[in-house]
Image 1 (cartoon, one colour):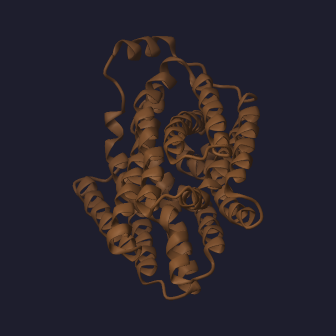
Image 2 (cartoon, rainbow, N blue to C red):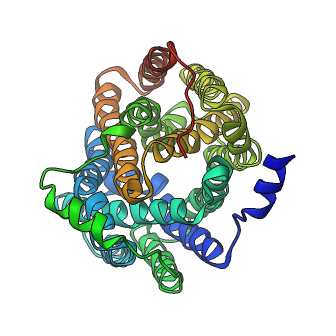
Amino acid sequence: MELTQTLQKERIVTRDFLLLCTANFFIFFGFQMTLPTIPIFVKELGGSDQLVGMVVGIFALSALVARAFVGKILETKGRKIVFVFGLCLFVLTIGSYAIIESIVLLFLFRVLQGIGFACSGTAAGTVASDLIPASRRGEGMSLYALGANFALAIAPMIALTLAEVIPVHLIFLFCALSGVIALVLTLQIKYKKIDPIAAQTLQSQKRVFFEKAAWKPSLLMIFITFTFGGMASFLPLYTDEKGIAGIKLFFTVYAISLLATRFFAGKIYDRKGIKYIFVPGAILIMAAMLLLAWLPNEFVLLLAAALYGLGFGSVQPGLQAWAISLVSPNRRGLATATFFAAFDLGVGLGAVLFGQISHYFGYQKIYEASLVSIFISLILFHYFTRDSKVELVK
């Protein structure tokens, strides 16, 4: 009874939370429109499958390097300055794709875009953790992710539809406009003030880049997002090779499944813990990879989308909430940076490695290799939790 009353008093949805979620939608709308179009753009510039993987991978790896510094800056200089800087850089770089005609320049701007995305994404996640009550962190993080999930439901389909009627490079102007809208919304948020004493202490620690306490959920995230690099980067090319329609619907079904998890996964995490989220979610992702490796028709493609969405939608916010719960409030920026650095590393390594695999062995082998990655994550999770119950540290 007492717990129920506490949950009712601690509101998740506030003015600032709504502004943040809406801004997050437009950030990811601009980003998700690039998922199916970047591979096409690279091909139009004369690139190979290997270069597709490298272009995707360099974005993620540059974001990874940037997050090594972003977490500390968030705690010493404040959330707003990092958020605004990241969005400005994101808008300028993604808009530049409309005028470049060289893969070399594309590589350069992908590096800068990765830095901008790391700054804005880490800042947004940290602000979300500031706004969400600790007792409802799993549920709140799931609700926060709705904006990104809804963007995924419509952005790739819109991008692929636009690609049929206008040159691919012009689509990136729409991506930049989406970033501008996010920037305007971001400026309306009231940000938490940093603790000057904690900031000064952290500033004096020269070699602090990541949060050690968050290493377990972050390591698991690497193996989970490893699969995402193959799905997002090469699936449009894979389905085209096999002559299977439905790639537009794939991203929509995937995103709808993600959305569905937001209404139950976070609550399960808050009440029962990460064990009841991670294992079922990882098994669903494995099932999706098996189906994609097989892929005989459109129905199987869409079924894989649904399973992947349910799995990834459960695992990702659960691991993020776990990472944040392991640290004190004045180190949430570092924990968020650590977690998303792991996210970037998984995507980047996956994209680069899968580019090589697809070149030498074909697209199908990408999804077979993904099975190994998820299996490793399950073994590690069992190892991390075998001796004691994983408790939430508020």
